[in-house]
Every structure is written in structure tokens, then in C-alpha cells.
Length: 308
Image 1 (tube, rainbow, N blue to C red):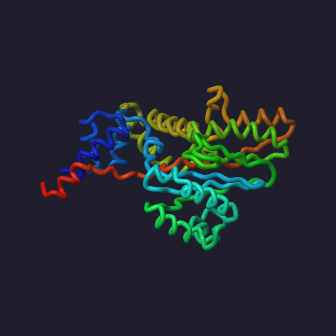
Image 2: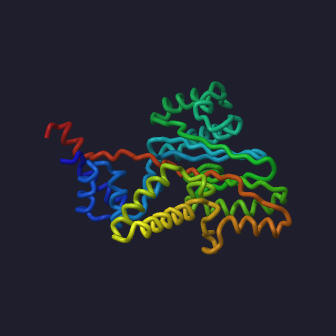
Image 3: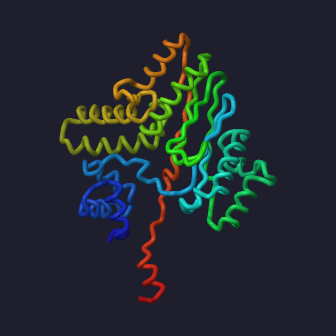
């Protein structure tokens, strides 16, 4: 018998939208591996494409900060949303994000070792926060973007406070266009990024493991069609091309008009401004993405403790 629980079946149903029996069968076939089961259901047309946002579970805050032509996003996790609303915690995230502006690369350990404004290091302050607030916290990740000339435009979707929230975006625009032009364009693109969840700037930048996973699913779907191998190969190539187009920022269709690729939006803005504008990079941090939050069965815990 495959090693999985009723909770695993429930999780797979929530992740995939497939029926209970289909989920159980998929878990049987994959020996309880939920990720593999999601892929199996997708290959059979029984599940929608997995979204990272569906795995968002951790609490805390994302912070964004910009200075000159450099910007940074930082995620700090807490156990509960209650702590995320705590002024002490918010102050820590804000100041840690500002400290991150001076840290080279995207090294979280270097950030934790950096000097904190109130004295000591970021790690020291984090330890003190855990002791005083009484809840586990961690600096999870950071990413920096910069341009030689131009503007870094920050955006926080549903901000909890200035520069703090659950979805933080940075847009790096390289150009000698005016700040007003770049600010307006950057804000529109940032809102698109928050809504459309691009996985990379271009198709070439997409993670090779993701492409391999999508190719495997496409191959299984094509094989089930029963069509000649040459036709199947074209089906697979078409599916991968569609996936890349929909997940690379520059080829995504602009959410504000639902027809223009982002690259064309940027080029049109440059033409109107009379100078070239390049969308060089971006950051999209959504709180807790990729982290599975453990869900406890309180009734079962009580029963176990009581020896029932």
C-alpha cells in the first residue's frame, strides 16, 4: 500500500481540483509523492497547472527598498499573521531591508551578519525579537536589482505599511528617459507582475528543471493522443512554447489591455519618450511562496495526548 494519508489526499485535491478517487489513484501510482501526483493528474487532463501561489502558507512580511539605481526585496517570516502586524516586527523588517541595500549579492547569511542600525548585527536583533515577541522568525531570502542608468520602481500590493506587505515587486528600467516617464511605466509593469506571476524575464531565463517537468507532462499527454510520433513531437514543442510565452515576463500579455506583449509596451513607451527603454530585470516576492505550512489536526492531538 502506498505511503500516504487522508491529509495527503485532501492536499492533492486542493492543489489539483481533481476528484477524491482520482487523487487516491494518483497517489497510489506515485507512492504518495504529492508533486509527482500533481504532474500525473495534469498529464491525464484531470488537474490545472500547479501555481506557486497555491503553496503560499508562511506568515510574515516582504519588504522593498530603493536607493538611487539599486533596489532590494527581503522576506522575513513569522509563525502567525498576528506577529506580522506587530510594530516591533515591522520595524525590524523595514530596517533589515534598508540594511540589505548595502549587502553585495543576494546572500542572506551576509545580510544577517551585517550591522543593524540599533547596534549589533541583523542576526542579533532577530534573536532578540524571537525572545521578546515569543515566536520563531527568520530572514528567508533577498534579491537585489540595479541599473547603470535609469530607475528602480518599487511596488507593494496591498501594503501593510510603507514598503511592507505580502507581494513586493521591483522593476529595473535602464534608460536616460525622465524619471516621470520611467516611474509611470514601471508602476504599470509592476502591477502586471504582481497579478501575472512571471517566472523569468525571458523564455531563455526559465528554470531548466521547470521546462523539463513541463516537457514530461506534455509528452505524456501527446502519447495518450495516439497520434504519429512526428505529430506528438510537434504537440510537445507547441506546449513548451506556450508555457514559455505565458511565463516569461517580456512575452506575457499586458493585463491592462489583454493583448499587448510586455516587450511591446516597453518599446512603445521608449518610442514615445524619444529614447530607448530596456526592462533589465524584476523581482516578485510573494510571502511564503514555495513553503508548505504544516496543518495540525487539533482533535487528533488532544486524543493522542489523552491516550484515546
